[in-house]
Image (cartoon, rainbow, N blue to C red):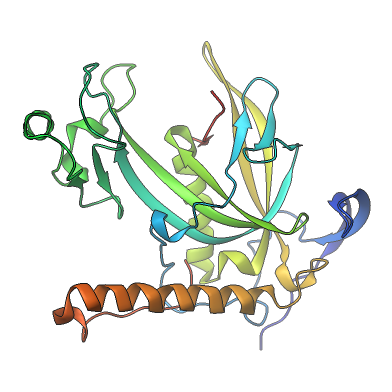
Length: 288
């Protein structure tokens, strides 16, 4: 039988229904919350976490970034600044994307040059000119990401292709959805955090995620890193009753829409296409 994890209360600043900050005692799981013998009801999943594609996350959603100078989260739409975030992760889209210019040269590519929405199999931008396409292929673009030279470090030079994890999130204190893009030094700790849910066979949105900022330094390099911590069972957090079921239904609707679009474009895949509503170094997208 599933049981709720033992919790303790902690004073946190949350936003009330009128939009004013207020201090409340919020139930939290001591430690990292991962060492439990049974999951709460509704938190279990079957199989692995499913990824959303980036285009399935609405463009209207505000992007949360990090001000590396001030050490604060910033809402890119409202300019609101925050020291700490509490949210639900309802989507994790892995993406490899190469932006112009390439090799320091100008080109006529609109937006991106090469992109792999599954972080494995890339495609070149169809709007590229023949010359630009030839040059990209010569440089190694368009091949499997696993062996692509454009994703490798060259000395201290960062890879030209950017591997990212785009998180779709719901702010449980402010009541809105947002996206958060993590890359480079942010990939390993973010993937480690998400892998905890895979190991537990739990939905990430069945628990509150807390994001804080830490100052990091390695030799002469200094940066602000985002720390993700798993907390209380979602249904126990103020104002979040029913959120797990709501996100389950939202993900299922998204999956059905994806399946319909795929079948319409490629009818031969109708019988093999399946979808499950069960979801699946730290560098968040910076300002400037």
